[in-house]
Length: 336
Image (cartoon, rainbow, N blue to C red; front, side, top):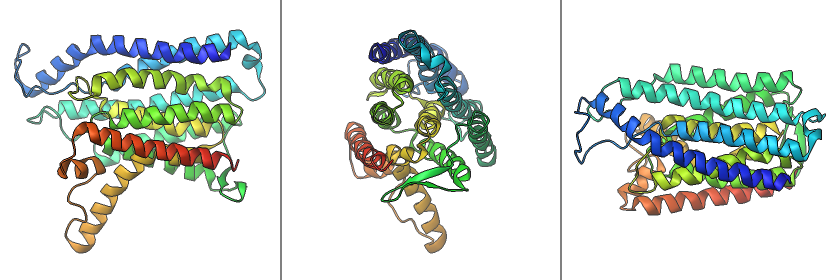
């Protein structure tokens, strides 16, 4: 019966996100046209592809998780009074993901209000954005600590689970760094959604393997929503996830493993994000050191574009990288 709940959550996430996308595309397009100063009925070929599509992911996933969790509880009533605090862990994972998505939404709104020639500005200032992301990370860790769910150690290959006093600080840094890396990946058609889709499938499998099968309704719902969104974002894109979609996906990849006590699994699962963000960090550091760029372009999807790779092939390449990260996460889970 719980398997039926996972299927229902995935299907509902797909249907709701697709329906919301159909409704929101014209609304978001008009919003960006207004920001550019063009006429509402303008059909110019350079009309911007609507952004902030992450709102569809957030709303569709939330509704699908609610239905899936109710079905799971109906099949297994002990979940409501479980000493493992299943419901608390699920709600904290959802809240943490939505908190990071809200930071991305604020960034998107700031980009639109800036009225740059292409309709999108730079967004929030770095200090503002980092402060909001830190608040979201502290909120998640605080709620986990209050409910007695905060992991106090990490898995090390060959050593198993090792207690670490600095673990909460490491998890906070991990969540913020992942959000920043996903923000850098924004702009590549389908990259974030494709990588996050593979990560959600992996989390469904890992939660089953690690004994948290009922909590898989969240990654199941988000996987269905991401699949629907990929249909919109596949070239030629009709709707971009925007910063809110990127940070929401990153928040889910970070918060779901953290809430079941295996935060380190998010490191390999977010491998494409780390590569994207890592290239930018290396580019900046090398420029400051040598006064010239290390790469012809950064992040990775820009570098691949400069080498003549099409958007579809870039999508496939980064999805393959995500599958490699999933394989590493499965290997890491065996040390638990």
